[in-house]
Length: 161
Image 1 (tube, rainbow, N blue to C red):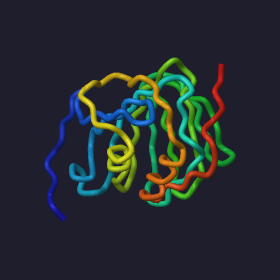
Image 2: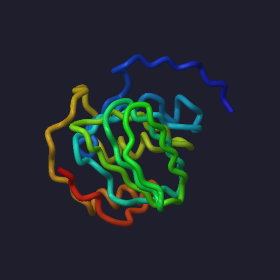
Image 3: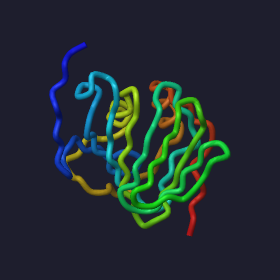
Image 4: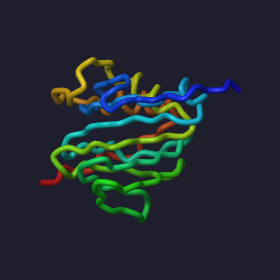
């Protein structure tokens, strides 16, 4: 195992991706952490929510920086706001949905690989703002998910007013 150097990332820094109509920023990657974890920050618009899915490789931790986000995993579901922490263990079907106009969330995945999933499905950008919404091809999303051992199990949450 290689001894890693400390990594200091300023607010707004990192590699940016337009990903499923969101802005994802890679804060720490597989290379930075010797494969231990990925750290992504994402900015998402109201009603964004991934399809119901299950990760077979990584556990996920979410920290709500700002906004309101509904999380659902099995029988556990709740709406959380600034400062909330949500732990979603691998192997458990889950989803979430942004309920505020936007939400900014820090996502930690362990072991690392999630940043490679985002890079594969997303588009690198220097524009650190939300992209213009585009049509999402669910079949393409499911195909890329499968390549990263993420199984799509159902549709995204229905939009809320």
